[in-house]
Length: 530
Image (cartoon, rainbow, N blue to C red; front, side):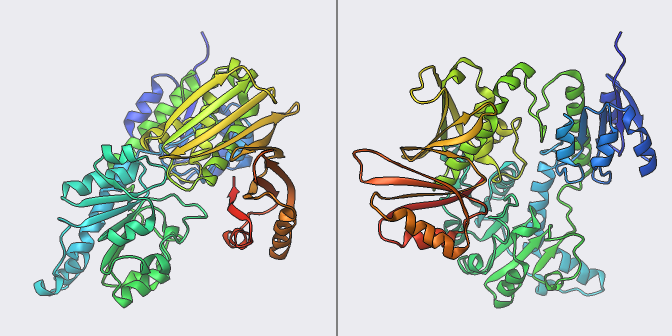
């Protein structure tokens, strides 16, 4: 009889979660362990379950000789050295949706508190004043709520808002029109369309370089007069100085904030305004959410130690070893093709088509299709995207993935073609792996063929096929301080346009692309960082 695996529960979780673990493993509670004791004993355990107070750095992980899974009872995994865990083959699993209901309810709670001046009225009455006329409020009924970011929490907020008879519009380029219709929400093409119509704006975007200060002075200027802004997602999404200016001018009627650019956050003019409701990051702070997180994480730890599917793994896909061994070299290629196709598109993603040609057609390529979807969604969802949760996140957004396999491949032993469709528009890219390590190479963009090693930063142009065009791009890049690593050009023999693809050592900013597009003969230009 094999020895039972040992699991350390380092921080408090629901009793039901502990009981679940004890059904299959020897469980030890280390709730009062200090750092020295944890360092001395972590090597005894096959699994560990933590919350946010325990930091598993590289030093600790390297001592964990038996460790196969780290369970984080919550969403964030900033307190786990992901690189060290992945290097040692340790699955890191979290509970990304355990707090979704709590976060959605808190969003509505602060929205109502903002409309009805609940905190201010409470403070006034508790202070001995009776000031009914001072705290006249506003109703949600009949108003339009604009939801920026329509993932799991954004969708729950929309459903609850509709119970108040609010009209709901939303913007999320990764949610299909069909999914919006299923939920009774009007999907909009741009944030600006949302700004023009919303009486309330609720933020549910992930934090990415593109979304930091998403709500700035320009965005506020584009909004309707008297709009109220609610942010229970990420503090960095809102420029608080611009928010204060908008409130001071009367452009904004109020704001409700549960998250801030850094935390703890106690010193900023926004905190002392009567037209702002603030709470200290309470979105996930309910007993139910905390219990749910512990139970979900216990389930994931059990799956990892029992050979099951770890559906919330954030670093390693739970697939059969023989499949991963054969296809793992192509996973980076597929993720990069997905990310590039998404970056070259200009609209929402309705459908993703992936073709596997050549020897790849002989394999079960589902993991590669998932890798394409992960590349498309990366950086555009509230949750961290990986090979396990990408299908679920795509399903939430109504994105359809279809795969075809074809044994014939004229030019390459293996070829992956990715096509993203948005309404009547589509973007197609293709790539292959080169050499014993299957180094990803880009072989086609916008219908033109060439051969270029992938890199983290790419710039791609379509232009009139005539002499001097490459030099023009090089001149502008040189003036802007952009270092080109490699370049390739593809053109159809009978066509009058060509495609140029370049890789650079740093991201190319939008202004540089715009400068080139102002030159005669350039039609389309995109900069994509993967």
